[in-house]
Structure formats: structure tokens, C-alpha cells
Length: 154
Image 1 (cartoon, rainbow, N blue to C red):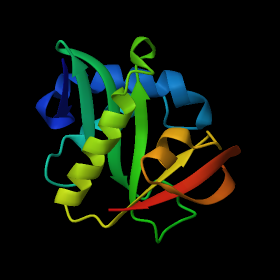
Image 2: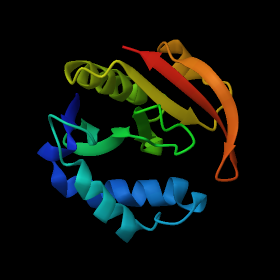
Image 3: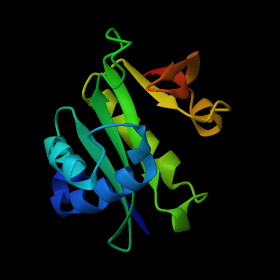
Image 4: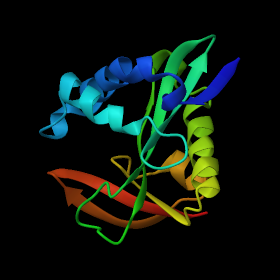
């Protein structure tokens, strides 16, 4: 049975999440080594303020993570709150884990009085995010990568 928890409840998960992020997105630029990410993720050990990370566990095994954080893209200083780092271990993809993580992040954001959440995705079709109510804002090239920026009002 899947369980959703905050990283603050399982801080020992930082090393695994840092490795996932480095392996998945390490090509994007500086600060993406596992060691650098571990240090950065230690700032996400919050439960009542941002930044924070929601974890998905299956039988106590960490299988996914998603972040709620501030100012992901510096070209959008007016866009304050961001969903990011949505990652599901490959063996668990296509089973609704990402959707549950994203919904949990939205619920948490709502409880923290966040009115809008933004995201960026390399998937221009935006399938899951559109299904969950995100609206496309624009396509941009950011750090050399073409992304779709989306927003959702809570």
C-alpha cells in the first residue's frame, strides 16, 4: 500500500533522492552532483513551510518524490511557488504514483495558503499536468533546454 510522507519524516531519504535527481537531471548544469544535491535537499526538511518534499513509499520502500519550492526559474521572478523534482522510480511508473504525489503537493500548498503553483516540463504534450488542471503559460528555452511552463490556481 502506498504511503505519502514529508521528507521531514524520513530525512534518511535525502541521499537516494539526490542520486535520482543527479542521474535524471544532472546534465542541466552546475550544482547537480549527488553531493551538491544532498546539501541542497537538507533545506527541504520542512513540514509547515517551503521548501518541502513529499515522498511516496510502497511497503516502506521509497519509490517517488515531488517538491514544492520557491522561484524555480529566475526568468519568472513574479512566479513564486513551483512544483518540481517530480520523480518516480522506473519500476513504479505508469501506476499513478506521480499523480498521487502531485495531488498531495497541491493539498499541502493549499493548507499553506499558496494560491498558484507553477511548473516546467520538457514534455510539451504536458499530459499528466493538463489532466490535473495545469494550464500552459508558454514554451521557453531555459538553460539551453526547451520547456513548457505551466500554472495552476489552487
